[in-house]
Length: 446
Image 1 (cartoon, rainbow, N blue to C red):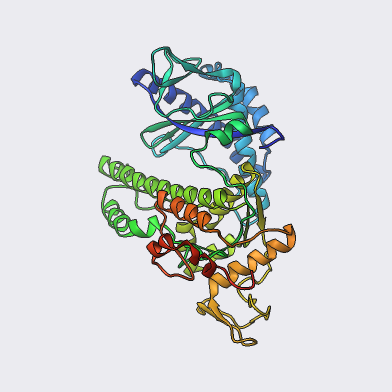
Image 2: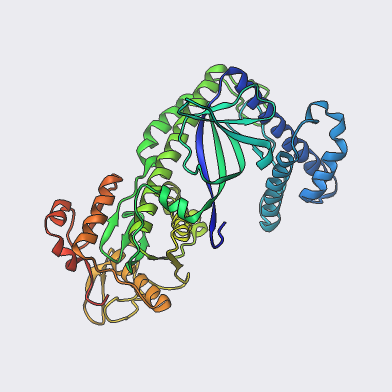
């Protein structure tokens, strides 16, 4: 969310609750889950009896009508309830849009759930700064004392609007959304955002995560691939534990099964965090150093339907990178453009414009049959995306001055990115020693 002077941005912080505070948080999680499951009961029952899909406002009216029966729900805040039904509205809308999807909603089960949350509005919580204390604290009605926040708050000048309390496995977090002045946000950044006319096209790929029109290529982290062997071993062990083997089996899950399930969930959570960390670093480096970015609009659904690409796409997360770059570009007042879905960036020769219709995914080097020009396939696509963007915005260059290249290289090094430059290979020290080699990174037509 943006306006001329303010931005709306969230910060996720780690909470350090004591035992009594954990009990209060658990009580709120249980109430939020109960309201969700009660609404799902109304929805599924109506769908089974008449085939009608009730909308969220009707479910909320049914809940409010029956709420007096449940004494423990009398103190639940209206904003918490409204957020639950807003989420249900989104879930029902997706089922209505997708005709092939299962129309029934799912219950949240207490024993198996590992991720829980509840939402509070502006007037229902407060951030507390205690004298002679390094840390901040957060408080809401029902807590005996305020909960310690482990992380530093970035936006002390901002106005906290709402908070979502989360439980992830055995850890507790709060995602606080602020209304912040743009100048305060930019001053809170660790790295300076460059105000230049640098622009790049970005081609996404499986072998090489991103290839840019300035020659910079960044490799994918692939955390799922690295942990695949261990995951398979854990799942084989899990299958040997006592648990229901088929639908309707009344066998209870053993403690050993639950313990190993938690271990697997912990590993999956670690994989997700490694992936998000890498995507955040890549997107931040690109937005900091380039004032305009153009990407191809990949059809993620089509990739997921393909057996050869589905797993790789899930591991690399192309769409997540696209959304992060788009969001951060808007925060920095930079340009972000998605190329037309049908723009053949890989098939067009960057030198003469000839379209090579018979190009396949196995052709990693683009050889133009018209002019005989040879170039890396991904680099060719990135250069075409740069040209596409330049026609739209009317400005931009991929050429670097020596000090600009040095900044980009240092930024990649600080973030521990696996990068290299297309025209120079993997010798990064050679780039640092002689910045004049930047001219070799740019194709003559750009």
